[in-house]
Length: 268
Ligand SMILES: NC(=O)c1ccc[n+]([C@@H]2O[C@H](COP(=O)([O-])OP(=O)(O)OC[C@H]3O[C@@H](n4cnc5c(N)ncnc54)[C@H](OP(=O)(O)O)[C@@H]3O)[C@@H](O)[C@H]2O)c1
Image (cartoon, rainbow, N blue to C red; front, top):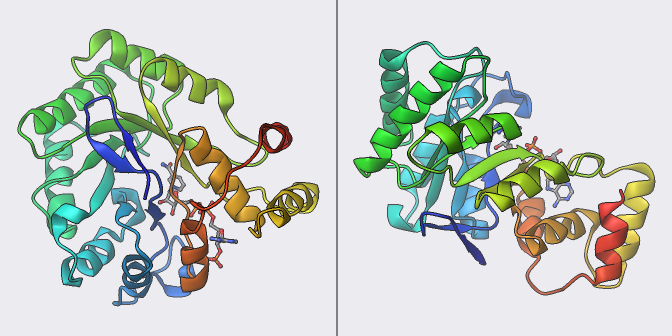
């Protein structure tokens, strides 16, 4: 597994596994929990060590249970979770309580990385929330702190007024919406990009082009896209409810794309 060194020197595996529908009935985001940890168990067996969780997914306990019952020691896992700011920020007391719940559900006393899930329309509150993350970082409970779905102006706010630079910005980046401008802004500021929904948009003509590129290397369209992202140092967190496809997404370290491949993929 290749790792990326974040701006605080923490090393993050360049591929993690997405978990937002794991352990849920019908593999649906809004499904109720089934009570097993099948997809997490497969991911660990397949060799994934980086898990992308979030309070919003309402299944941190599924990820926590799967990791805790595995034979892999905690320090070999890289666990990310996120403060649920989808409906904004509900104050410091709320943030502290939600963070403590995440630690309990994920059965750990620290997170490798903790993110603010979404920005909202109140700079003072964003800075207050960031200050709380900084405090957990200083106490060693969060080994790294970052953001998700932040646009350039939100990044700039934290850079100007916060004390600690975010290590990552987790944003959408896939076929049809590579989000290159924002990736460039992250990069320029020493912030790594994590691509969510990395396998989106692989259909129609794009799928044809990607499959054609993949044929040269014996790889699928999905593998070509993931390889493209990691070759430009973008961290990916694909998700699958199928054990073989989980393995396939990890099997991208034995080929290299050419400059011409890059050109074709970037125009999709
Ligand atoms: N920060 C945010 O706001 C945010 C937002 C959305 C998602 N996320 C995170 O990003 C993760 C990934 O995003 P996502 O779950 O939306 O989508 P994704 O990983 O881009 O795509 C998942 C889809 O791709 C298929 N798939 C998986 N591996 C494949 C392979 N090797 N070949 C072909 N198809 C494959 C899956 O089907 P099968 O299951 O049938 O294989 C599923 O339909 C989430 O789980 C979550 O952790 C974060």
